[in-house]
Amino acid sequence: MVIIQSVIECCHVTKSYVRGDQEIPVLRNFNLSVPNGQFLAIMGPSGSGKTTILNLIAGLDRPVDGTIRVAGTEVSRQRETELARWRARHIGFVFQFYNLIPVLTAAENVELPLLLSSLSKSERAKRVRAALELVGLGDRLHHYPRQLSGGQEQRVGIARAIVGDPTILLADEPTGNLDREAAEAVMTLLRRLHRELGKTIVMVTHDPFVADYAETVLHVDKGKGSSR
Amino acid sequence: MKLLLAYSVRNAWSRGRTTMLTVIGMGLVSLIFLSVLMIGDGLTRALVDSGSPTNVLLLRQGATTEIASGLYRNQTHIIRSLPGIASDTDGNPVALAELVVLISLTKTGGEAPVNVTVRGTHPMAFTLRPQVRLVEGRPWQPGTAEIVVGSQIASRFLPHGIGSALRVGKRDWQVVGIMTADGTAFESEIWGDVDLLMAAYGRESYSSLTLRLSDEAAFEPLNRLIADDPRLMLQVKRERDYYREKSVTLATFIRVLGFTFTTIFSIGALLGGTMTMYGAVAARTREIGTLRALGFVPTSICFVFLMESLIIGATAGALALAGGAALQFVTLSTMNFSTFAEVAFRLTLTPPSAAATLGFSLLISLLGGLPPAIRAARVPLVTALQAPGR
Image 1 (cartoon, chains in turn green, red):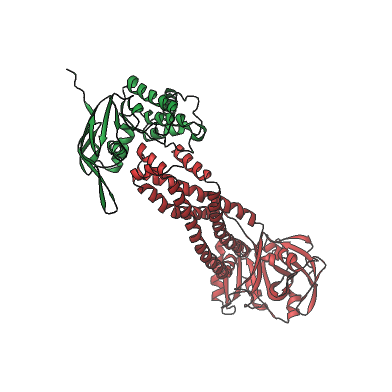
Image 2 (cartoon, chains in turn cyan, yellow):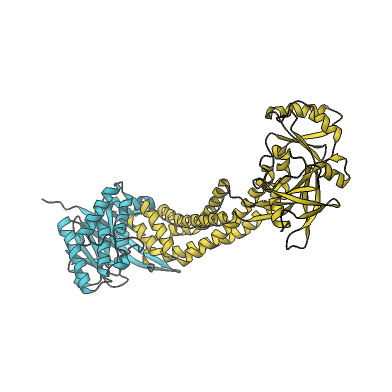
């Protein structure tokens, strides 16, 4: 019998935001279990709480109620500094708008997460090159983000997310700012990372074409999830 | 660390004009701070360095300056016979009785006259004060109405230099030489024959007596001998202490005035730095969120922005030092409140002043950069990630 261990467990999670004197509920009694090595897409209309789920998994935000256990750590109960260190070790983030630092080169952007590790300079350089070669940008190490296309920028973002070999890759609308051709290239890359490197990927998207690259799709609406 | 430093430097650089204006503003305030220090150092050099460590000055008890002092001839004879005084090659004691008077002179192109020190002395003065050297002409002939003028006097009062005549004590004196003195106050003096000057002013007493000790340890025994002799009623001062006391009032006045203005201006510079860095934080909110999402702790974010502010401060400090280096060629003159005589001095850049200026710039940038850096560290993470990018 094969026991598939969950790397992400959300139990009875409630989350709401306060705007002025109004409390806006986003997630109500939300439950989620993601097995290790799964490629999960979360879909849903705007305001359904997709990005909130991602933020809670990454420890960027805290639930009002419920528990979130990710990679063996209960992130909802960690202190800010501990969470930052935990994130550096376990989470790789891919952003919709790439979020590259414009004054740093592609290689320097990819090196950023490694500054939080104890790796030597030469080891860091080796890993940066390997990550950029993996995303097909081995010849763009010293290019600044403004010298790259949107698709290339996102691939640098993916290289930055995987360079530290995190347990989980979280992608928030990774193709939301790309044309179809570039989106296909990015999604092919993510699928390759999942299939060849066994990465657990949780991706938020509203695009069914992009969601098709995932193994499992979770539809979220009004703070409740249903799997497909 | 190196990458984060590069991040800070490149961000400061990427803001181009804003950074440049902040650097210029902060640099100018730092330059004012440095100028005050340079004036103080220049005055100290001009006045305190006029004294030699082995020279001793004797004044009448109660007198604070040579102008207000008086020594009779018989007193100078008694002192010359005391032990502890160095001798010249002929075996004579190296002790010089001098008369100091003030005359009014008008600067070239100026209107209001200022006081200038005239020192009636002896050619031995060049031995006693080795920093004083003739750079043009020759020494005065004893017994003649000839004078040697300091280089600051020559440049500011005597456009025709050697051969000019000056009216001192109801008679004309001819300028026969020009002397320098390593930037000390002697460059603002006029030297001539002491006996002729006493006659010209109808004086029977000297102003002071300067002597060279046989060694520095001879000071205390000589001091006791003079204090115990009821015929003398004189005070003994090391020459450096005398000149230091003369510089205190003026230097303190300039420093207090200068630092008051510097403090006011530095508040402006500090606010300028704060605004610049608040602007930087606002423009890079999403970057802050990204760094936090990657695992950087809030203190690292605070460090990055503080570093950026300190880079601006260090550049401003370097700019001020460059300005200070240029200011070394400026000579200022002012009236010394202690002697009521004009003293000219060069602005002097010393290593401690340079270090203090760099420290001042860094302090302004640190204080100015701290509130924005703290704000950067406290930006709510989710809000930061939703902020518009650059």
